[in-house]
Image 1: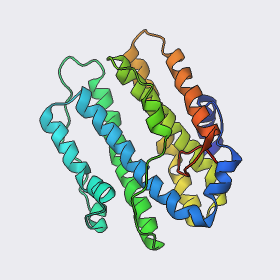
Image 2: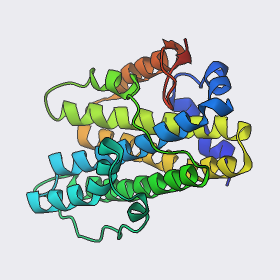
Image 3: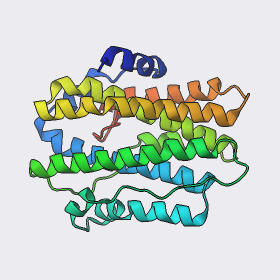
Image 4: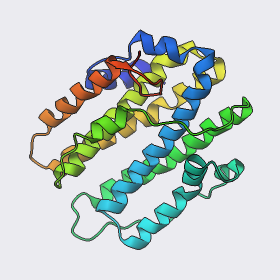
Length: 253
């Protein structure tokens, strides 16, 4: 894999790189269980975002309910600490054909990109859980970071602006994940090093898919100002002191 060419558009898109202070905290052995636990939860949240976008904007109730059923075992495990984790590794692939509502100019593209994203994020979830189990790290609920919540607060409340802003936020979250995987990987053990580098291609594609969809839905509207607005906000969250250490947290306070 050509990492520099893969990361170049990511680094150009983001308004800052992850500071060394966060890397120093993330590489500490005592923070590994917290890092992996939050990574696990982030994979589910990413899948939930894709599901919400599909259900909210492009498919009928039956298709939306089928997506809900797919995520249910993962949500039960994460939110209620219930369920047999091994069952998550045996989930059948989602094969239902999701058809967008008639008349949607972007519906099929959004469905195709988000279904692939959901499948990949749930696969990554199972991979992280497998690594945790192999290392004897028991899953325990943790609080969410300020990162995504703070960006979502700035999303406009009328469509299609709401959808455009949510897609832009998704692009930044995926781009930051990709950048952090690449920057952190050299400081971790061989297994995690290989695993995090293996995630770069999909994370980079997810960022580009979100951004492409945002521009497609905006049509001829120039979204560069909104992209820059969220870019500045995202960078401030990454560079400012943060009281909690999480995968997308800022500088350790």
